[in-house]
Length: 397
Image (cartoon, rainbow, N blue to C red; front, side):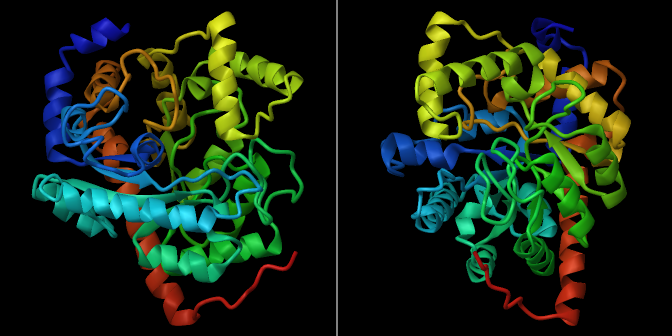
């Protein structure tokens, strides 16, 4: 099915009604960083309560996309030289809280699965926070606990660079997965009820964390490596472990992770950047270089139809109870045709309905699965807190 067909799908009205009754929970959105970069968090200068032209996300288009709950990423760069990561993360957390307060008629803070459903029931978009990268805690379990106290409900163990205690998918491995302190981070997240997010981490870190965790985990924005072979995606053996863990893989829309031609273009761009003296691990510098590189080497375009095979592969390998969606809007410069902004979710769900996905399947995909995982993490935390107090482990270089 092409994108135009998805728009005209006879299933579109069906899924639109379905998503009006059941919350669609998106696992990852980087609007907070765009607000920081574009206007220094001045919401008067960039009012996302109205349609915007410089972001993928605004409140009107979230409504059109039938997004019922959003994990807002509080990402900051993971460059090892970024010693201010903890401060910047707190500024991001503050920005999301301010965003929720400013648009309190349309957004509502959610810290539990029950609160997600309560906010959704009252016609607002439930807003959760996710920290994208273990560098945001500065190797401190005390900082981790304070992020949880401020409403952060998942932490991605790494971003594009290794942390001192976990290997990233896009850096040279040095730990073989998690260090002893990394395992302690996972255990403390379990005790708190903070979801362990394995997007961005190396395959060895995925496996190590899945063996270490006592509750289900998530991938907030990752796709299937068997469909698109790139380090950011999830191998089949890990999807099988995820099934046994009762976790969820929230498939992302980033073209480099969903279409092989786009992934291959990125590899070529990284090689060219290295030759030009730009580190592919420097997220901001490489993004600038990639725009210049694309002017002479046009990048292939992905489409909505490239996302569908990832969703179906995760369903086939891990099972229908272990798949979700995490678009990564405003965290990538390009998006698939048909999923150009946050309004596109009904088209994707209609394409799946046309391929035989039942209403029950679509409700699980939309948010049922990740809300189950969040509830499991909450229940696990209550049990763990009766067995043990806060960890006093400290990072040792």
